[in-house]
Image 1: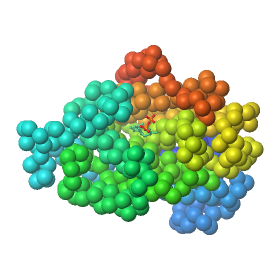
Image 2: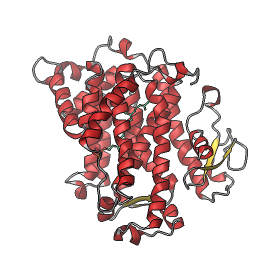
Image 3: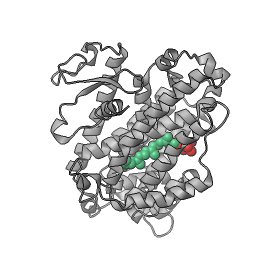
Image 4: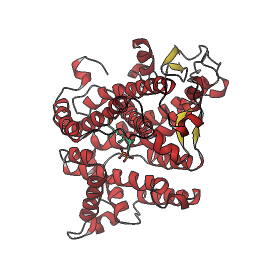
Amino acid sequence: DGAARDGFQCSRLLPKKKQQRPRWVLCSLKYGCLGVGEPGEAGGRSAASPVYSSLTVSPGGDAAVAVVSSEQKVYDVVVKQAALLKRQLRPSQQQQQAPPAVARELDAPRGGLGEAYARCGEICEEYAKTFYLGTLLMTEERRRAIWAIYVWCRRTDELVDGPNASHITPQALDRWERRLEDLFAGRPYDMLDAALSDTITKFPIDIQPFKDMIDGMRTDLKKARYKNFDELYMYCYYVAGTVGLMSVPVMGIAPDSKATAESVYGAALALGLANQLTNILRDVGEDARRGRIYLPQDELAEAGLSDEDIFKGVVTDKWRKFMKRQIKRARMFFEEAERGVTELRKESRWPVWASLLLYRQILDEIEANDYNNFTKRAYVGKAKKVLALPVAYGRSLLLPYSLRNNQT
Ligand SMILES: CC(C)=CCC/C(C)=C/CC/C(C)=C/CC/C(C)=C/COP(=O)(O)OP(=O)(O)O
């Protein structure tokens, strides 16, 4: 267990000196790692040659090659985001710049940007109450920015998951992407877009994770099965890991933190992945009723399970065993995220801790339901939710991990 976990963690972001030279974990795509390869070793990527297809196949089979490419792709985005954060002006300096014309117009006392942000806040409160409560601790500017990001993600998600989802075409997503580009260029289409358009003038936010999320929705339109964990990893990055990357520039890294920007982005990514994996495990029955199975097909087959078993929805020992291992993996991602939360600015930690603790408890509830995620929805009761809030607050007061242990 411990060894698997260590292996798993080292597949993520590495201490600064190794940033350019990732060590590759050859996940067997089972539930941990078989081994770690340095570039040049069997299964490792040559630092000079990012040609994933030329990788030696590991004992994990050809799927291991795919893991390397997926993690590499996401790792590249993370490094790019971290570099942008370091290069761009700090938010306090950026605020001194004149806002674009559109934002200024909208910033009228009545209506305008104030109203746009307020509407974003209402939407966030309606759909993600606990997270919303947590954002109230943040500074006004950060809180409003997080709401604007939340609303854009929610709207993107609703394109493929909302009431009109069945009419959504790839062209509609292309239009949504052009609209995103416009709002990044200071030309928002509507008031909710205007809030995000303003937010990106205030924080060093890059368009890439937003575009990636739209790409994830494109995947969702045409894909109802995931061959292996690599494919699922990529999907989870697109639809949830991206949210973590979008949030870090707003939440901010604690001024006294000694952690690298890469490691904080890595933790944010891990939290998005953990949340999405948990969401998937909670919603197995609901998704199956829509004809979708967001579980790695090879792992199902290895556990002796088929799509038919999922559609039938009977909890068997095979299913329990399969679920135990999926839950274990989701918990590893949560664990990986924890350290990063401590590196955020103090006032941004609470909402993140609250959502981490609450979402992770869904996994406990799946266990408490004896792994019946076919017909029972794992639900964290009110009392537990309320209890999580002070616990989260207590954790948000802890010193950044990098200061406690002299680590990054
Ligand atoms: C850890 C560090 C350094 C920073 C935090 C960065 C953040 C905020 C990461 C969180 C990313 C996140 C919230 C991803 C979304 C994941 C997810 C599965 C959302 C589910 O949304 P809904 O579909 O509304 O959920 P419910 O179905 O549970 O209502």
